[in-house]
Length: 427
Image (tube, rainbow, N blue to C red; front, side):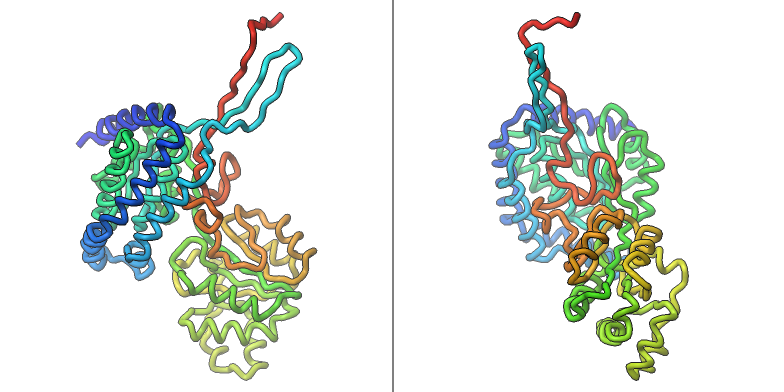
């Protein structure tokens, strides 16, 4: 198969659909989103059946438990997909919003207005809900999308995309506005990366290897995050019971996702009190602990010799690792500034949290940590488009240009300058 020609044909159809979307009203696009939500609910059984086909192949593909969890579509997750579409439909329309406007001395009006980007390619792994989330956000923002999922979720992705295209058709929109590529050949990804003039933006979602491969191959703009090496820092003035709950949630609630905590930093002022509590709780939850040498004395002082013997010594690489599993690196730090230094040195600029009662400490942490999401007294697991009120996210960006953090519909727009006058001439 000629992958370049294959992608070109799909992209040309998507560009035609994007032109239609750019002229569509918000009411039409929102109606299509509600129709898609209704279709997802009506065909939930078919979606689960398709998902079972993928789950049946998970052992053959050697998927980890975390990957299988990402792949699985439960009734609750299918309902969450439908609800997210309705939430996105209820949001204000980002297309056509005036960002700024001014009247010039010569009478011209200069306006900066939001417009769709055009055709967005989204390359992702494992999580079939990305199909619905990404398509919905692209539709809301007036963009066509080309979706390429992983082979492990092929049946699920195709089934969801088919349902979404039915919703588009019922609203009178071109079904090519949402295209799920049905070929898992890696050459398709390469062709998408080089589709200059056809695809306007790529958003890769998945493991670091996938994202780096896309970024290195691309000749078109890419927005991405490489890894989710997220931290929780327990400050000297933390509410320790709150900190314990946050740490357990951030690590254990769903360890295989990019906003799960991977490193716990504990201020030396509370280490002797806090570490025995939290490390015991994490151990009971099945977490493998990789700790700095300063952790053991706190456990020994608390009489937890068995746990002290069980924990592993953290190596340098542990501070850099996104485990995506029930494994946690733990370090005792001397101060807030040392915690910030550690996060900025080893983190991935994704999501980092402080637990503290001190407003001054929280403000210093927020200003000093160079991450796309900085949390104060909440779990890192809230770094998510749905939790931020975006309805869903097309991806999370740790880049600093165009978009940062969870990307909603507004982040899938660009802008144009519109200048209106009455015959003004430049002298």
